[in-house]
Image (cartoon, rainbow, N blue to C red; front, side, top):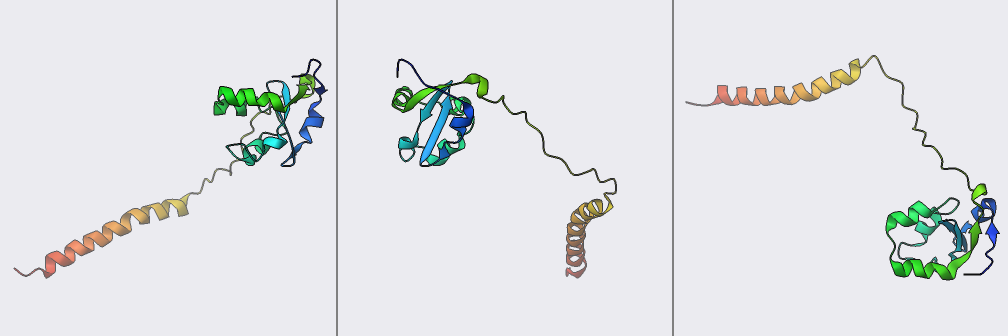
Length: 134
């Protein structure tokens, strides 16, 4: 690592989100992983999905080995200015379809799905019973 690391702003790092130009933010440090894209065991899609955000949680959740952590040092290019990194996005659940008060068609289909097989089974038993020779 350099003795005087360069400080990058988030907007600059966010632009490097392509296979031929990929930077990641992990634990407040910026890594240029472009040269590692083809060699990454999970494929380049995994690295690309971690661009444009703080990828610390993505990196830690996988449980990388000590050798993988040591390997990161050669891709280190500087620090991230933490004040420029946006806060985590809050989860907004998708809009649900409005409640349908009139469930008559759905209820009728469910009843028929239950009754039709019973009627067929009953008919089969009746035919067998009345056509059986004694």
